[in-house]
Length: 355
Ligand code: GFB
Image (cartoon, rainbow, N blue to C red; front, side, top):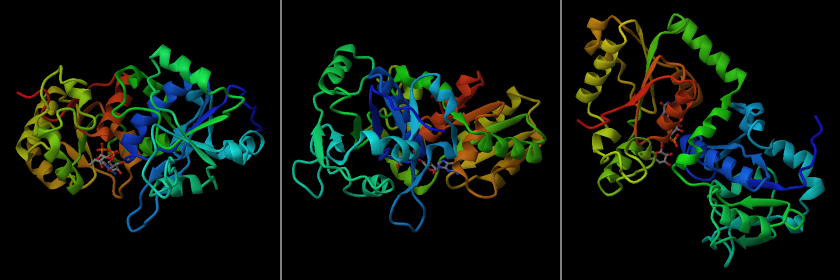
């Protein structure tokens, strides 16, 4: 398909922070920001890290998602298509300028150092992008709902002069701004992911009727949860406690629930949904299948999980559960919660509200 060039310009960025959940939060913000500036959003590949590999790996955006629903909201193009078909005509070397708020520490002085470090370097290298200069956009910010700031962006960076605003990191906040949560409805799994999810549900859970659990309990998480006491809105916690703790304090069991608390909560959910006969467990580390089996034997439910770790398939399956229990603080859980909200499916969180 040959692609038409957008005279209003483009926005590119590196999803250089965190893993999938963080990047998805950032994506929704970048989507709103690009729309506010009336520019096409260049859909970046997802940045992934493979065990034993030093450099990040860039996975094309449409490996997981259908790009079509996004077009209902704003103009988009995948980074692969942009670099092949558009960049050669509109983004000459001297216009390849990286954007950052203030200089970033790295190889050069007074520079965004957009390619210093991992995943920064590997990300732009995937497309053979070198930057000729840096642009410090501070004190502007990327709040798409601040009309004054948006006007300033538009006036300061005209598309004729600045065809591509290429950001060193996502032009978005983390966690996702409340105003942008609803944009999740444009982020739809592609048919390959959906088919895999449906097949798993068909083969392992008799076609449906299951409780989905997200257990975030790996070592990195145990360490992260130690910060709960001094970070009352840690990571995705605002989805539960509000952006200013207006819905209550964050507790450590919301981040890392004890086994006892979890089992109690699962039992309560199964009592509420007596027709549910399957429990699907997703985890980055310990799925607790044996403990769950033992403790749930009176409920006559079958416990199941993926045989091989596949975060996106876990997310897609959790998105289809009849009921979901996730983690307030995890942006991985936050993705599932937003995804389910789009289709009106009910969810709750571990140890929240605190009793
Ligand atoms: O998605 P994510 O940003 O969520 O990062 P958090 C967690 C990653 O751990 C996921 C894996 O992208 C997956 O690769 N993971 C977590 C899982 N849960 C599951 C699961 O149920 N199944 C599978 N297969 N994989 C934050 C990071 O994670 O954790 C922060 O993003 C920071 O940057 C913090 O590192 C400690 O918000 O949960």
